[in-house]
Amino acid sequence: MLTDDTKLKNQVDIYISMRKYNQAIDVLKEMLSNNPNNCRYLYLMGFCHHMIDKDEAALMYCYESLKNDSTGDSHYLLGIIYKKLSELDKSKEHYLECLRINPLEASALSSLALIMLEAGNKKEALKYLKKAEEIDPLDITVLRDIFEFHTTRKNKKYQKEALQKFLENSQNEFDKLVALGVYNLSNNRFLKARDYFRQAYVLNPTDKTMLGFLEKSSRPSQWLLIPLIPLAKTKRPGIVLLMGLVALMIIANTPIIKGAFTILYYSYISYIVYIAFVGLLLDFIEKHIRKK
Image (cartoon, rainbow, N blue to C red; front, side, top):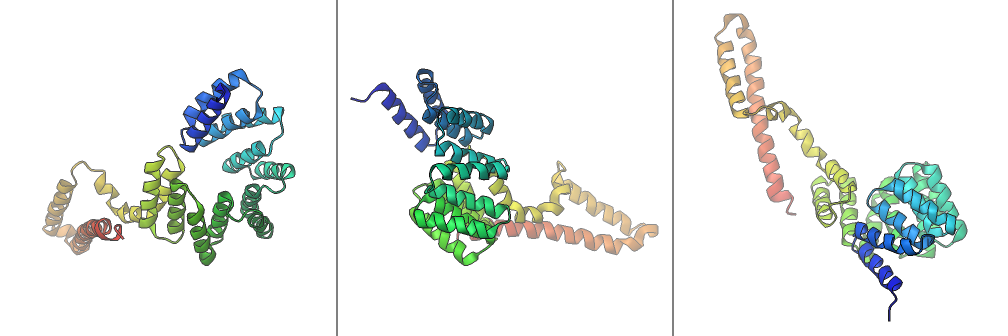
């Protein structure tokens, strides 16, 4: 028969696997009320807070965990958090401490490789990445980091191979959609990228990074729409266009400014044609290209 503590642990594991981090936090609070110095519970509190973008609280719980026992997991999580906060030196420090405790932690090695790459040390990055792959070639974090490495380095061939291997081994649909989105975005396939990011967002609407990815994959169409911004800000664009036509007719019959008529006329007609072109192009993209 399961003890109450074991039942609560199982509950936390289930909530985390379902990405229900707030519910996991509620259960962990109950567990910590009975055992406030349990380093594992404190680490999990830190992890859950990190996953809901409450990194200040996550850092607090990680350091509380380390006060009670110096575990590799807490140092690894601190490495992740500090990388997210762009504090690369602190991130590197905690990844190295994690590896001091557990030299064969493949995910810490591959994460450290990305820190080295970001710091401009490609040689060291490759060394750590290869070592991580040797230790555990099927570790999903290692596979994801290899994909990110080649994406950053713009190694198209190796990027595609890394993506394929990641997709074959990952059991997480959200992570696979994000990887596909990143791959297509980095190869300028903006519509496909946006489609994958939208699917990922539906699966996990609380992930704030998805909004950034969606914005990046929408940029090409935003450029097309820039000339239409002044018109879009008016409440009645149709009337504005009609007024423009009336203004042209007045100019055509005004001797003093009649010389400017030809330039204004062709500029105005070009603007109307552009509006029609953009509308038809975006409609075609939505109906045909997006479906492929």
